[in-house]
Image 1 (cartoon, rainbow, N blue to C red):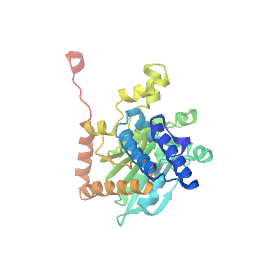
Image 2 (image 1 turned 90 degrees about the vertical axis):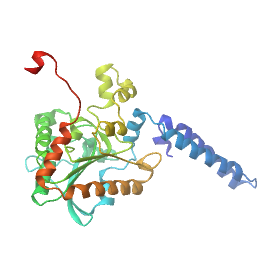
Image 3 (image 1 turned 90 degrees about the horizontal axis):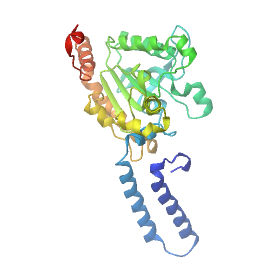
Length: 326
């Protein structure tokens, strides 16, 4: 466990790992037999890991969703899709590098991949705009989703963004309008659409590519109308209240299942997806394959009708009084 990326709740595991390393070094440098102590520490580490990760709070899951070593969209695309060919540009303004799109093979068929991409280094993050899309990113995504419909290709989207870019330039180019158009048009795309939430799923920035037939979410990812920090700033005027906000927002994949917002929670390796990229990618691939199989045989009219009904059933409301009924 890299000390640079250890969260507060992981410190008991880290401390035991440090003790184990020191004991192993001591054993190799002397003739004393420490095998019993080493095995005891290893057992304790396993038990502590299970206990810590089995009782994560909503805020702790948000922290894991932002882990610097967590696999990003490109890591999944390279492991799940063959012969991926990236496509660029919205044909209106520019190419948004934080929205990576293209065609790849999945299970022997061509599929359109729409993904939000973060960067790991400072240089990459600047190029990827820290995973926050400008309007041209959403317009590129819609252009390619329409292309997928034209050639009867299923669409897979990978969601991982803190939110659409809120800068002046983005507003000048009408980011809200770009997202709104995507919401409307994705309801009418005749190809099956599966959205996979692999990290952060912030507000309209996430929803702009997630109007889909199936929503799959990794167990340490989140999907919310606002970030915990943003919510805390509004409710308490204090971003430090983010843990309380995360709890109030119910940022748990299990809650998304209960509310029918998500259709499946994908298991991660113990400690988070960053501990085993291949295991996580295999789990994501299996979930996509299972859900895509149930959608591919549907007629266009049936697919669109089910998609419409899926979104219409969200939430509960009631009207009271003459004004409300007017």
